[in-house]
Amino acid sequence: MDIEGYEKPALSGLKNTLAECRPVIFLEVTMDSGSSFKDLMDLKSTIPREYKIYSVIEKSPRTTNIISYEMKELTGKVNLLMVPTNQSSRIQRILAEL
Image (cartoon, helix red, strand yellow):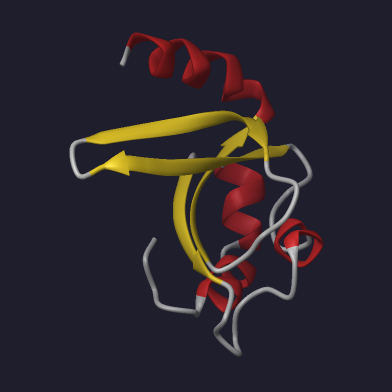
């Protein structure tokens, strides 16, 4: 989702769907927006606890690196991959093949 600062209301509206369907989410978060999250804990409060949050870093226009550790803080504009715990090992195997 790339919704220019409205990530918090969107995820809040999807709370039941996320809990039931557990989709993998790719999200761009803009922290300097007034309607965005205050911090990482604020983000985590809008998604089920069973999700892991990974940072996605673009190294160059043709290369993307997915950092395989959970986010510790949110600053500026960041791309996130949010994965239900029961799917994280499958996702890590797929990413290792890239």
